[in-house]
Amino acid sequence: MQKNQLGNTDLYIPPIVFGGNVFGWTLNEKASFRMLDELYEMGFRTIDTADVYSRWVDGNSGGESETIIGKWMQERGNRDEMTIITKVGSDMGQGGKDLSENYILQAAEQSLDRLQISRIDLYLTHWGDPSTPVEETLGAYQQLIEAGKIRYIGASNLSPDRLQASLEAAQKQGLPRYEVFQPEYNLYARKGFEEGVKTICEDKNMGVITYFSLASGFLTGKYRDKNDLSGRARGSSVEQYLDERGFRILEALDETAEKYDCSQASVALAWLINKSEVTAPIASATKPEHLQAFRKAVALNFEDEDMKQLDRASAYKKQPT
Image (spheres, rainbow, N blue to C red):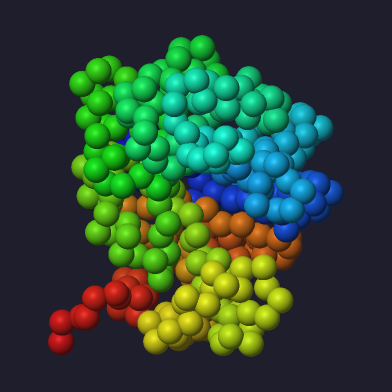
């Protein structure tokens, strides 16, 4: 499998996927359109979103991101050029995570309506739902695939056991299989993926698209102490990284960024791009100039020692002497 081809599919994923969680949250519709236009002009054609984005914002009910993306594609007439990833299973007001057949079939129709498209390119299980058998979930996806409403499926945030059970059920019962896994993975958050589903993804030839690729902005280097978090929307989530290991990672990012005359964000994304097990990182931006970090990350040609230095700095286990 080529690095940027997803599993056993004909879907090609570019080196960076844009995270659409900012649409309807930190970017209103007008600003979102400007960002999407800029992305398009730069050649980015793959957007990751979810039905639940951005339900957490006061006054929102969910679906805001999908709605904005759908209106933009409709106005620009470029749907056929775009690859759209969205997700199902989060609490959209029903009181909890839900991957039942009836819920998935209903939620898929709502996402299609908001996105103003007839078929979703990649539809992901957003969270595990232990109350629903994996066979029921996969059976719902099969109905959607047979109806031409989704092309392929993937998963995010499943435990290794749940992912393995899903893959085994797909094989034994002739159901659709997850072709991609979306884990939290970055220079700081390594352990969960590397000691979790990584082996399964490699063994089963699954693509890997990482989220929180910049650790909520920490890996951009703009947060150095608690004073930097004041008034920031993600301040509380970034504070967890302000420890000895986090500062060690920042030092390595600073040195590599200086070496290549680029931003720390570019280095952090390039580390993921250069990981053989990663298909592509997801990254968001709120200003057009932030996109330059994406362009530079894709163009960076790391030497082996660069990767080793970043690996050592971000190690979560004591390294042998």
